[in-house]
Image 1 (cartoon, rainbow, N blue to C red):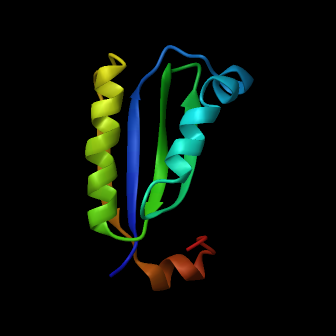
Image 2 (cartoon, rainbow, N blue to C red; image 1 turned 180 degrees about the vertical axis):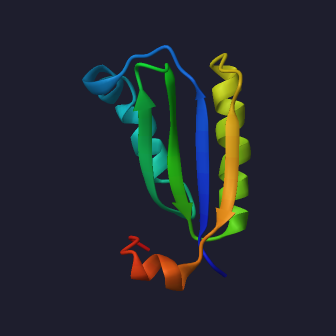
Amino acid sequence: MSPTLLQFDFPYDGPFGAAMTAAFDGLARDIAAEDGLIWKIWTENAETRRAGGVYLFRDAEAAERYRAKHAARLAAFGVTGIVAHAFDVNGPLSAITRAPL
């Protein structure tokens, strides 16, 4: 069983920066408790009006379960144009380049 990287990207009108941090503190804490999540990096770009995240899950099953849950949550918020990609992680090469696996 190898880790699975999950990437979300979607249109987002804000808030960004510190306001985003304040607005999504509760959501971040909920995501942190997600079964199988190793870590998440939150992404945002105020200039292009996009947001998302890069997640590392312990396996493909956990990543897929979360992908479905988060896509449904975003859709319930009215977010459209959601792009989600899952990737297997090459551990040996990632270790050479100092990936936090």
